Length: 251
Image 1 (cartoon, rainbow, N blue to C red):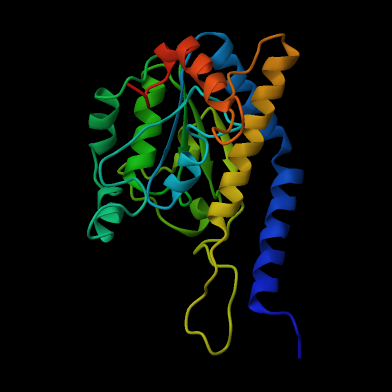
Image 2 (image 1 turned 60 degrees about the vertical axis):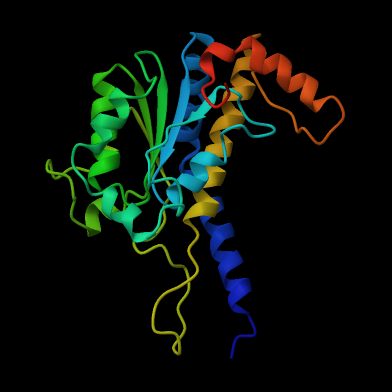
């Protein structure tokens, strides 16, 4: 009988997934980081969107110490994490046709910007429609999804397509359908999801690539510093002033 605990097994699974994206998604990560750098250098703005728990990875790259100050959260009421009551409403809203168009029409997104759309399944109407409409506006779209869902589930968008079908670049998280890494004989359902760990790591790898790419081009990457280190607030105030017209999370 194995003496490996469920915690050991989950952490090993997460490490395995991280190693896989390091090796198999290296080219996509490099391309996505380069696209972010291109957007910053050309005067564009950066946005990230995720519905439900996918919003956690989007929020992780917005107003973040060590992150790009120009990354903005594209918000959809009722879709930011599980802040809506009942929480099941968020899942229902993700299946509503037309919602993404309304959101984009009211957003500051414009041609020349880049939008990161995070959706584990990529099958619901909202992320698919958002990718379609954003590209029609001239926005570059990076999709972060599990491509496996496109072969093992049916699309919930009227086109029958998935997020991955409407992106300039796709980052495959490699998460198995159902997002649960563990099973036990005496537990009736799979458990221990790893999508947040993997997706957040993917996006931080992209941001790291973008920062290094800008530096290699002789452009200071607009990075934020921790407000909990001496001089951090002064540093951030300078960055926020310098790029204020491309930042939408401050007044």
